[in-house]
Length: 255
Image (cartoon, rainbow, N blue to C red; front, side, top):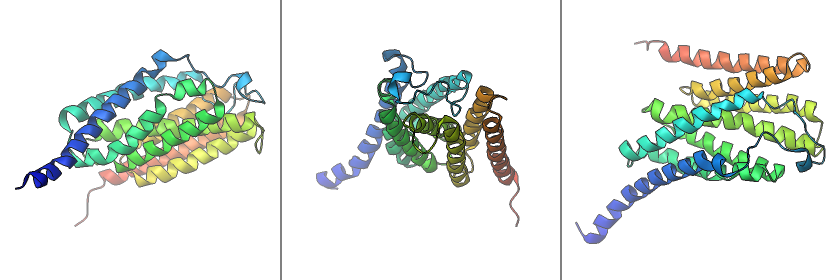
């Protein structure tokens, strides 16, 4: 084998190793980012022409505690990937879109504290690339790769429409905050069902969206009963889809 041929054969290995290390590096920056910026608990009144105080599309504060699980599981996944799956082709396909999402997510808190519009643009990029990564995850190493990416993509799906609804209502686009709660929940459900149907062994994705919907129910209660009922109906739809997929997976093959 010539030197040039040997060099060419090493290139895919080196690129795979590089992407594994980049995934870990951007996971670390993403997880560490809250320590280097002011806390974010929603867009402040001065960030929007029409202030959105406690927007009905936003889940109750406790729901955001899921970030602890997301951060920890993504970090464990990235460490395992570097340790055991540096040159695994199946993992390699997931890493490029995941790197895009994590790199976009690293400055998100800092951006969100300054600009609602750019925060919304950025979270759309984060969610879209996370969903691409989820759809590329292999059946193998479910708990090390698909599961953490699933809950990450699921929360970003919900968060995208929270950000979109708050920002659009804040600029008076189409309707007010209550109208955007109905529209945002509906759009989030459409995306969730489409994604869940394409990745059947990713119950964490739908489960995380259900967590967000229950948070919306808790935030609105009987004061905005229509929003609560829609979120509850959405949670039942997603839950039914996830349950049906799990039953299908357990059904023995015929023949």
